Length: 584
Image (cartoon, rainbow, N blue to C red; front, side, top):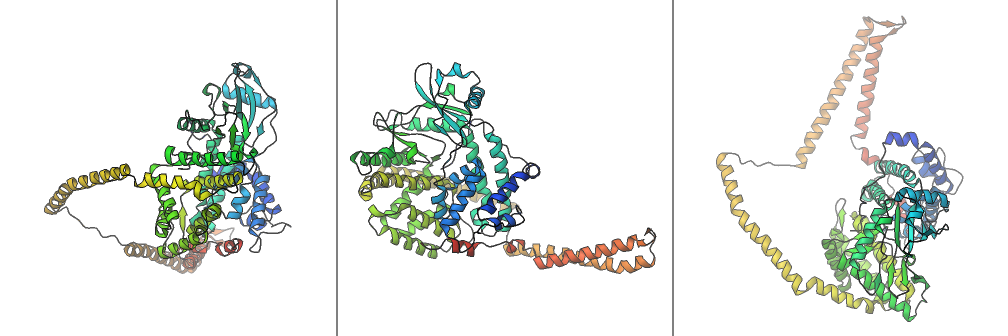
């Protein structure tokens, strides 16, 4: 769930080798280092080898306010350009990775860019569609409706007279983003090799997810598929509108959609009857998206929600869409019901199943922390609960107990928090408890209804029947293997494996020591009977023997000091991060 569907042509951002990255992007690395220095991240730039000095600006350290560090981080992304802006926007959907101050700051990133001249847009449009612009459209307005880092949109009119919106990819943007993504892959590997806590955050996995997401956004077939999925889900619905697309006027770099006439939802007067009506419609839409259709809008901010002229609630911009499988829906239902009923054990178990433990997890301590969080937030009236803070604290607790929350749920968390903000803005006095009560009853009916219980019982009966049918055959096979002498018991022990590894290591050390001793003994013997002299002064075999002895001695000593525990020498950022994330 919460993943991006691949375009028909697949990812067209082909990765380059690290050698080519190093050769082609040295100037880009230098610029990144300069931007980091200007915004207070000079020590990070020096540590990563991007700069020789930290620069004159105030440095980020353990005394820096989280909001100030987040503001500077946002400034870095904005200055580095479109790829990093898009990365920041995607990271704003990852409250499991970044602190709440960073999430709030990155959520404000505006993906604006200077407009591309219309002549260049015309060329890109015609190249994408494979025909002249005048043959495809009756007219296209030269002034763009919006200009973002990846694409530019224009109003147009078809030869049939229908009004449409054309989204055209900016020329050269794919190559620029490929180069930046290659650098991010390199940085992620460096972080994992040098910082111990990166085992929990898995930066290489995050960069791979960013790569997939950006590749998907650059392939407009991806957004077209999302549009089709939503159009199918809400086909003929009198309450909700999804703009149709025009397949004959779309390609990998061009997307033509129906123009939705109406007002942005933010234009409604907060607290008015109309605002209350559309707040309720929005909650209903997302309930149906997640629990009925299994596909939901990943970025429901006010700019993507329109009150159409026919009074329907319209959704636009389907570049980020989440998908929820049946198993994930079941976990979400269980989590919601556990939260509402106060079942702390249920909350902890579901959170654990929604992630992956990295190391030992003390369930007793984890449950105690979940209970504390629930008591702080859910003993209040649901009308006043801060959903964003509640979700963030649950994710923070998972991190502290070394549970890596699955990235599949990240877009859903972001969408839910954004949705809550829109609903509260539209209807500040809305009784959230009364609003969600009907949905709570529907979830209970769906989870424990007679039809579902019978289906589960039937499935369990089939599994039991299959097991009982297979047992006699498996027992007979075991007896045959015993009778034929083919039955073997293999014992695998971690201690045995560790012993074998240690014996191999000690044997290698002994070999190095004996080789070093042999070279030490051979050195004076060679000197006494040196057959080869360089320039009449340098004894060749004697010198080689002495250098070999010294090299082996140094290598053996270094290995003894490190002891194969190189990972123990990685930097630890935990103390600094705890200071940066002081209690509010």
